[in-house]
Image (cartoon, rainbow, N blue to C red; front, side, top):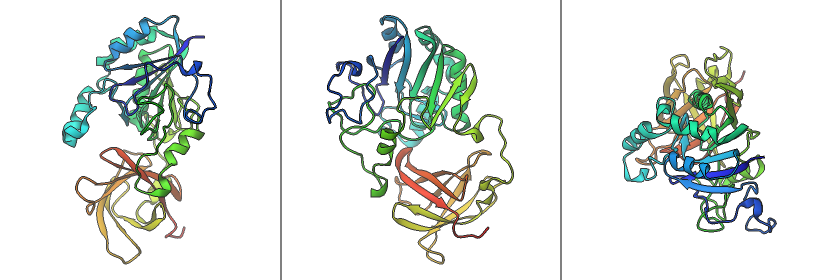
Length: 347
């Protein structure tokens, strides 16, 4: 059986401890400082700036690798695997987006990384696992296509990515850095709503961590998807005309923690966009905005013009049923969750 390696990019939200003992060697696993926070199953840890540095580290290890987890920032169909954007706050959003577009690992940019990905493949056991611990990098059609393209290069491994925000949750750790396999730390970060404060943390504690069996894991091998929690986003898939998303136009309940209001969608689902507005109750003041459908999928995003500059929320939700859970981000940073419920209209 090969070794298990946890690697984090220099720009990752969690920096792994390279001077700590392997978690596989830790004896006092029931200590409160570890319990429920650490996956005790990693033999080595490394940080890297360039993918070539990870290649050099793996070249110096004995045997071959059976599980390689790489932690980095990510988004739909994108992983910042060489930390091209570790200081986004120093740039405008447009500059930040362009930096990522030019330098991150995406399908259009994959040729830049092919040589090093091929070398990593040589250090992996047959039927091993390469896990990308990056927010939403496997999400939607773009995420599926990226996993599939990587799996054509890294042929020894099952390529695993996640479709959700939050593959780890960390503000303060046991040390100033984190043990490989760290799930959560000592403190929860700020949230827009007390009721949602620990949702990501609880999900990490209860779900299989850094694991292909996680509910939100998407897996590719040999250029094909072999596990897909989002079949409606698989490349080439068309939705049935009777899907729930076709009922979008009209009024829905909007719930954020204990707060409940109304959101109204106008326009055409077929056209893929339109006007939206929210209000405290039917007939109350309207906060106007816009909605957009994500391709021909079940997902929509919406925003409102009355949000303060710099705090413009992006609401994202898959409209698959009468009640749908979505997430809120501001400049791609998680800011809580919401629920969209069709309880205002009769069937």
